[in-house]
Length: 68
Image (cartoon, rainbow, N blue to C red; front, side, top):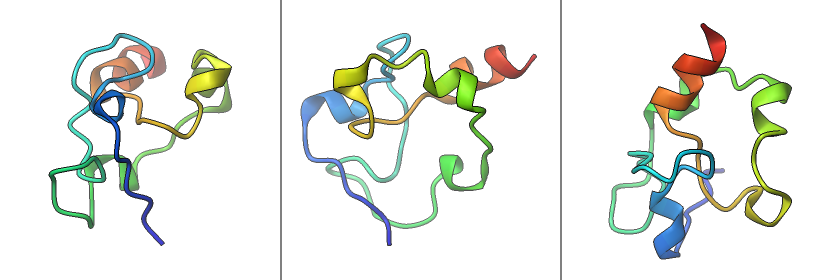
């Protein structure tokens, strides 16, 4: 089941605050998103402030920079 986010913050990466381009955000089509096929290491999730967990997606740029 795909979770749809419905706040203005759902568009923002919780790490850098840029647009996360997640298709599961409000105003975009639900379905397959770039983030669905990615692996997010536990360590990158620990960078997300506790109050923002599961409220928005980490952006591709932050994920790529973290993995490199």
